[in-house]
Length: 150
Image (cartoon, rainbow, N blue to C red):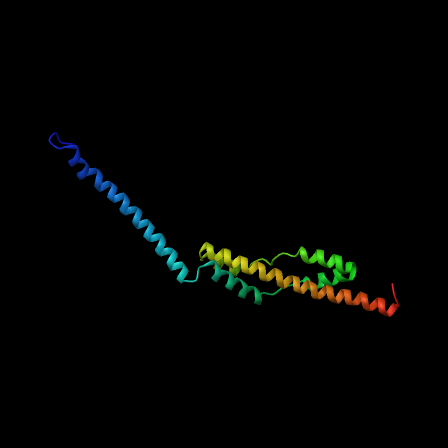
C-alpha cells in the first residue's frame, strides 16, 4: 500500500475484486451443478426412471428354484410353513451385466433401479413359491380325501 493511497482506495483496488472473484466462482459452481442436475433429469437418470427400468428388467429375469421349495413346504408344513417361507423370500441379485450398466448411471437412477428390481423380483419369487405351495397343499388335501379323513 502506498503512503498516499487511502484505505478506501486500497479496498476498491484489492479487496473488492477478490470478493467479486469468490462470488463469481460460487456462481459458476452453482450453475454447473444445476446444469448437471438438469442434464441428468432430461437423460432419464431420475429415481422414477430407474424404478421403471428396474421393474421392466425384473419382469423378464428368470426366477429359479422357488416352485420346488414351495412344493416341499406345502407338503410338509401346509399353511403355517408356507406363510413363514413366503415372508422370508428376498429379492434376486442383479446380474453382472446389468450391474456394470448401472455403474455408468447417476446415483439416483441406481437407487430407483434397485428399488424397482428388488420389489418386482421379490413379488415374482413369492408368486412362484405360492404356486408350488398350492400344489403341495392340494396334494395333501387330495391324499386326505382319498384316504377318507385324517
